[in-house]
Image 1 (cartoon, rainbow, N blue to C red):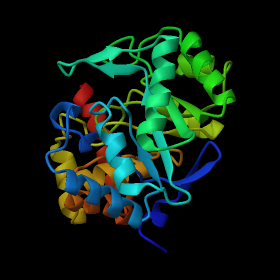
Image 2 (cartoon, rainbow, N blue to C red):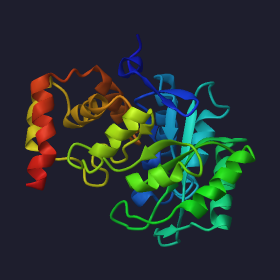
Image 3 (cartoon, helix red, strand yellow):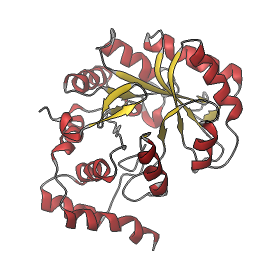
Length: 292
């Protein structure tokens, strides 16, 4: 059994995907804007990830913008059979590196075509619609118009599956009235557990949940409890945080990102970590302690 196979697989639409994948956001420059500091290393990271068995890559054409998709194409095209590439639409980047809402029919259609061109694809495996009603997280608001646009592009054969990102449970339910929703991508980690109920509901329904910022994002997870558990298990805190997510629910699929091959290997090794019951109990208390 290879390393990644230990984590198991889950269905992402029609695709069977290993639960530990790779997120490409950090391949862009500082602030997810501009070119990478080391393009050759970025290409090497992608190639090593796929050679190690990763078959799920998460990206977006607004990373850079256009930077990560072009690097993915340069590193991996023509793509290995079974490699699933997931992207996001719903935003653009300003010249000042700002993140701007791009929700019109024209903007969404252009985004899909930009992703196709920069990735060198005829159809995108999964397109996630990223909601941006509130800069601090999910907020209620209708996604009917935007999902209708993506559903039409799906009927045209340009998209194979549709997912949602940064959304509420109600938006997921409403979205399913328009098109099949194969995954939900929200912020979730040891210290940020607002989606506990949603994860369990999606697990019962057989829908993938893909946490972004699984290691804390721009503010890495820091916890004495996490550090103590990691020390006992002879692992890094971030490896333990990933191992906890894999054990949290069978539908959780991870996309930790890095621009370093060394860090990539550390992330992939998280599947080897066995979390005993006492460690899980300690780790489960981190969010409660933070809330308190």
